[in-house]
Image 1 (cartoon, rainbow, N blue to C red):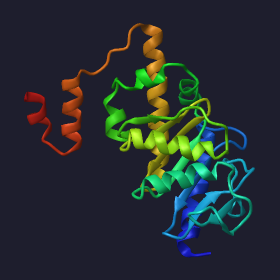
Image 2 (image 1 turned 45 degrees about the vertical axis):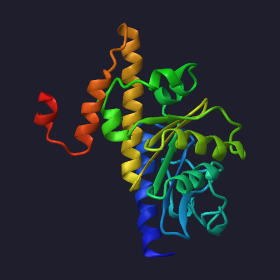
Image 3 (image 1 turned 60 degrees about the vertical axis):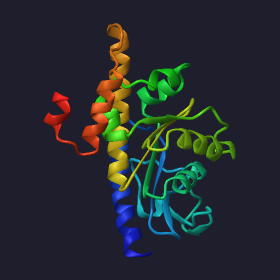
Image 4 (image 1 turned 120 degrees about the vertical axis):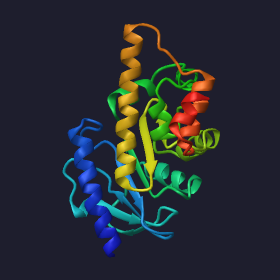
Length: 225
């Protein structure tokens, strides 16, 4: 195993422990991966508790899903491969079942809910949230529906998987993990907002100002315009 693979596996073991401790997944749920290079992807193997991962809990596969070393890969491997095909800039993917985000993915009408921005952090940290239609788990429908959702919201680094869970992506496995935390925080905050009353959404002008900040414009210039 290459040094890059060994380092990536160590990081993924740490991320798995954090995901498990924070309740973002339970049991043997969830899976995550790192694209090592153009020919190799390391992914969690099937059937392991992510809070107790060992070096033997990982599999190295090709971009087509061929096992290069290790045991059977995560059953959601098609989901990971689809992300890497759609987003050449992405090098890490985390799939988990955080309670609030998963609950939102089970709720009718979330497309309309998420078409508006209630929290600037969704733009700053996630670049938006894509939403899939429901599809049969681990089947060929998964990469097809995921590709559709990502093409519809190409900049989004977070995806709600209808009646399934959530997926986040980034340049490192830690970045993808932090995005999962942000997504779950937003979903919890949205739920609390609904409990208290009517959610306040940013206006078109306010959203445009956030985008200007993201592009690097001076904050004071943005605020006074």
